[in-house]
Length: 141
Image 1 (cartoon, rainbow, N blue to C red):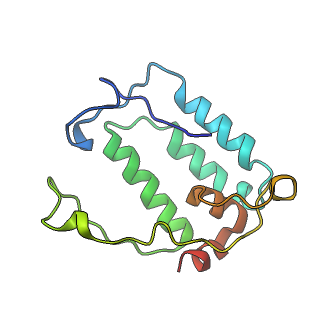
Image 2: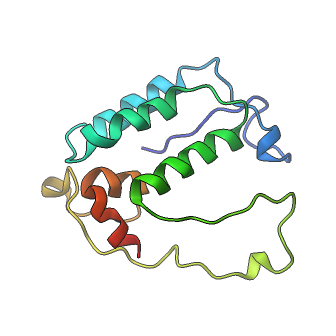
């Protein structure tokens, strides 16, 4: 299930994420948590990571940037990855030419519904973390 955060003013905004406000008039936080609980409630590491994820998801953030940073910080801490990044107002020259390894195949790991539908590649890092816990770091290195 694709989860999307509703924004005041809609999705197609051309302003910085720090100025993009989240729309809290919808019950999206409860819906997202329900989807995550349904998908990962039986995952081996849900009891360990679930409460922190729920806490992050249910907070009200001033901007989409604040929400994204909270998620990145939590996830990098949970996976024990040191992520160095900086916030910029504009992409540095040539940044769009930087190659990434986002399409590198991930080794298969055990997933909650894997016995019924086989391994599903390309899911979120949350899937990896809930299913592999501390070993998730090894898959990303």
